[in-house]
Image (cartoon, rainbow, N blue to C red):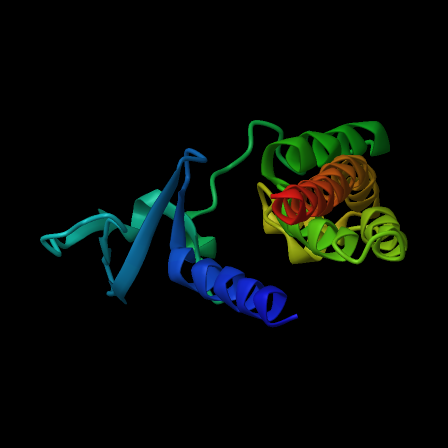
Length: 197
């Protein structure tokens, strides 16, 4: 029992040790970093593997959002790009619905659902129910990155975004359940091999 408790503690410590901030540029590129300071014009950061502690700068005008290691986010709304399809052009419901789906494909990641589902699956077989609940809970468009925050006032855009994000979330939750279940079987196999020797 002590071995399992130590293993769980080690996994939690390693997870915190590897947690990093992520700078998401307007182009969609993600920079893994340790953000040191956010000034009026720049974001000062270090690369996570930097041994010398060299500080780098990136202009805030080039950054959409900073996602911190503790889960908080800072979105720079003044930097949001204008989408090719403006609100005036997308007046009918089909256009806004399709725009919502495209934004969900582009911006919704669903990684939290994957890792939460993997953690639930570790309590096999009961945890698979938790994985299913995670997968089938509809993600809310207001809680995720979108191309233009003004679109969040359109119910057709929200419907398209949330339906597409839900499909992606189900896939991520299924992958997480597979990861968690595979981890259990690998650990059980290792224990069985250890007792035979």
